[in-house]
Image (cartoon, rainbow, N blue to C red):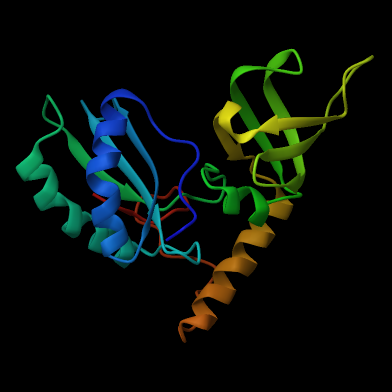
Length: 203
């Protein structure tokens, strides 16, 4: 898998990611993000997907089964926790160059780790992507502000899609194509959804 993540975690989350990413890739999936939150005491959330971007409840369960023994042996967490494996969801984080290419044209919000064109927070649509970074057309500019901003990949701390009708339609179309490619029947309107959030989850 050559499309490595360019937006990665720090601290404890980075240690967990380094431990689990090779295991997840061996299982045939890609790690999207590791997040430790205070939900239910402490929750370790592992976001993953298939290379085609799809992720079913069964896939989440397969990843959970695969990484649990590694977590038990290596014990990277310093407290009791709940493990949650989920799909990236429709308003997904963008962590690979390929993510920015695949979802160009859709509204997203981006936070930089350093000042870019005098600011750190951006909202807009990706208009082009190259090896070094992306060009973002901002959706709300005032006065003399630049409408299109060039943002290097090494400046991006976090980026994620914003839920819009266009994004929902595109996500459903992509999911339908992925299921068809695997020879699976299309899902009904009520997709597999373990926790009511619109994204498959395995605990």
